[in-house]
Length: 244
Image (cartoon, rainbow, N blue to C red; front, side):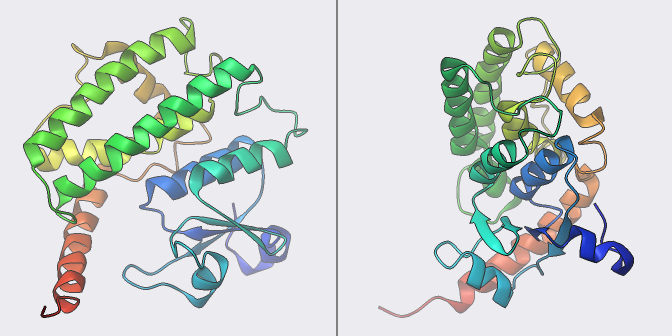
């Protein structure tokens, strides 16, 4: 990836609207890096929505959005599938399994991940209401299920996808930075090597992968960011309270 003006024209065909702290944006970055696609990152400002974002994703008004030759594609997992299809001939392994059953299994677990982790993380950092102890238990249980899924999907290899990072690796791996931040905030150990040993070892390998190592945000920086984000969310909610 390059943001320098000298290389901007070469990267302009593929642009990503997002934030380096977003796990959903991380998915897009990893998929593009796996495929060797040059892209330009357009950072959105916390608490604001650019005109380009509102124009590109008028329904949900959220990041990430992939702009490919100016055409917008929203929603992280949809973008990952798009990247896999468009750059299928780049000489690198496919992100989605080619077998229909394996593909369906990975999609099932990816949806499960998005049902469990984003809300748990938001409750823990204080941007949405909820019982912190309850969501921590839910995330811990989810990781135990994913430990079993990893054993089945990986077939004793390094990733959910076997020898290479797949759709499910990206879906779960994108949350690892925030999982580590939650551990620091709540004083817990979610990726407990005694409870989820295979998943803990997988997390180390995933974060060390060349397509990932420079993309996963540092947990301490995410903790700092969460304080600002929580304060902004509270201020926004307060300003939108109306009388009945």
